[in-house]
Each structure stands twice: as C-alpha cells, then as structure tokens.
Length: 330
Image (cartoon, rainbow, N blue to C red; front, side):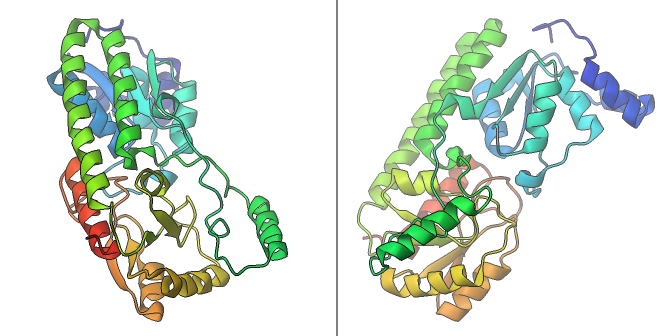
C-alpha cells in the first residue's frame, strides 16, 4: 500500500541472500504476504497481537502472524523468509520480552512503525513462583532462605509478559495500537478509532463477567501449568500457583511438587489446570498424586482445533467457566 515507499530493507536483502532469490520471489508472489498488498500490512508476533491488529484494522489491514497456530510462542525461531516479510511490512506489532527472536529481528528491521505492546501498559514482577506464597507456618529464617533462593534462581524475577490475559490491560494495549494505526495510516483513522471503541466495549463486558463470576468462590487459589495468569489473578482477587515459572517448558523441582500437594489440601484446591500447547504430563501426574481433577485453562498464546473457542473472547469466556467450576463460584 502507499503508507510508505516500498523498498527492500537491508535485513530483507540479508535474508534473501541466505535463502536464495528464488525463495524471495516465491514469497513476493504470495498476495497475502506482509508488505505485498494494497492494504496496511501488519506483522504480528503471535496470536494476541494478531487478534488486536485484525479487530482494530478490520478490512483495511492484512495481518501476518510470525507464530503458526499450535506453535508454542516462547521459543519461536524465525525463518529468513519471515524476517524478510517483516522488513517489507508497514507495521510490526509485538510484545517485547516474550519472544527473544522477534525482539532481535524487530531491532534490526527498518520497518517504519514498530509497536511494542509491553510499552503500552505496565508490566509487573509477579515474584518467584516457588517461594512467594505465604504458608503461615514457616519460620522467619526459612522465609529469608527462601527469598535468597528466589533471587539466586535465574530468570525467576523477570517481568511477566502475559498482559493479554487481563482484559483491562489488554484494553490499554488496544488503545495504544489504535493510535499507532491512526498515525501510520491516517486515511483510515476514523475506522480504526471506531473499531477500537467497539473492541474496548467487548473487553469491558468480559471484565465485568470475570468480576461477577469470581466475586464469591469457595477458594481463591488455582494451580496452573506455567505462570501465565498472574495479571488475571491479581485483577480478580485470586492466587495463581504455577507448577513451572514463566517458561512453560521448565521442569518443577520435587520440592515444588510436594509443596503444591500440601497446599492443595490447605487451600481447598480442586483442579490442576493444563494447557493446549505444552505437555500436560506434569499437571496430570500432580493431579493424580494429590487426588485432584484436571481441566484446561488456556493462556491464549495460540488458537488451534483443541482450543475451546475460535477467538480471544470465546476462549476467555471458556476460561471463566473453568475457573468458576474449579473455584466453586456461587
């Protein structure tokens, strides 16, 4: 499209050299490829960013996602073709710190409009998943040692990137994305604004549903496969206890498993939640050993045929029902 003058970026040239000119030509002949349509071409890093771009952009955008459906986004490695596509897009929408390969590619790319969702809201440190829950009976000295261990463990105190699971923060991001679209493609600014307002209304309804649905429950504690639901828990007065940390592929320590088994009894936990994109083996083993149920709580890092819904809102509504059941909502 005519948002900016088309030219092959330096990073695209590098990528073309790496994969061969024939592959680049094949890529260019794809009418849906980023940077090759008459629409506002947006490269989104993974599903929650893709959803925002599609909802706000409507008919005026062509959105390409770097993360395929069913692909776990945290460990994404970009192909040379994807990197070249990014260089030819009108905008890239990503969430800094979630996907290191994307962060690096964006930094090297000369795409004019770079939208970092992490900069459109406030990321928080949700602490060390193995040591930040108060069990009441622990001695002060043990607490100090736990804190020391927490700081010693690499990566445990990284800022939590899973902001899209909080409808309020997701709305803040959507507002920032809309403003960026309006500035980059002023011819369609009015439509971007209308679409963003409509999305904000939907997300506001989702927030209200969560507030009402989780207001009164038998327990406030839920177990998850990895620590993706910190913002959601904080928003609605719940406590997330994760088997793994922010990385879904990490392995829990035996001490962590034992701690969760004890806590399940103390806090009236009924269910261990697992995910669609990573192995459910550890979650199901914990549930079996502790006599708990299992269910899916989807961190919405991608939509697949296993997802309980075909878009963000539908899956979030499914997550709410799962939480209401597990927590004993009244």
